[in-house]
Image (cartoon, rainbow, N blue to C red; front, side):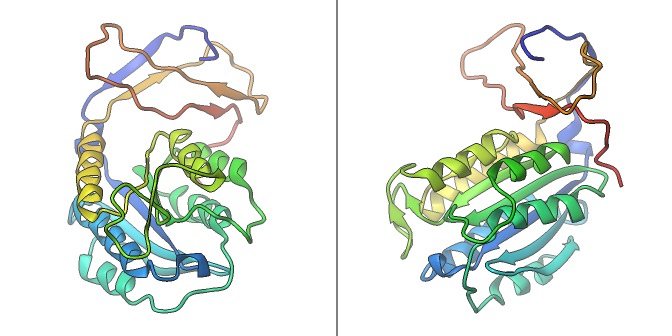
Length: 257
């Protein structure tokens, strides 16, 4: 932590199998996503069907534009989620991406007992939020929420109508990458649904094979400063990579209500 070695107190390798998963799927319905609604809907349901375990995990679905609307609260019923996702027909007038992340981390994910995942399906542009990128990352870190971002703007193959070809190109793309990496997740830039399905399968494997490491920081001051975390393998092996959140804010609060 902050380049100082820390003493590990507990280590567990069964977190992914025994812990319940709570997933908030947020879909962008602003004007900039016009022509890409089908891709967004299929991406949302593919993620849900691939990653979520029936009768164990819980998912909510919401949309955001100039308004943030909860379409389906936490449930394990795929038929209700499918109805909510494909029932979206209208687009709004602005994009409140960061406000949506803040709202669902603070009002929904903070209070659950389990692992927290937030999926945003968006082009990464924000035109309406009071919160900014740093606020969104901060609330995700404080509530121990991992963010996965699916871009509707850039595609490796460009096989889905309305999704453009290309890699990470601009500030909005970079912001999606930062949102994901700072919270231990990943960002995807592909319009190829088959490639997305493979990525979701990879996420599923990672979520089922997570490790839990706990330690008591040697710095015991809760002064609101950001503490950067780096986790390294004692015996590095080819092909193995550690993915974790980059740090946390040292504040004396809890993710519990």
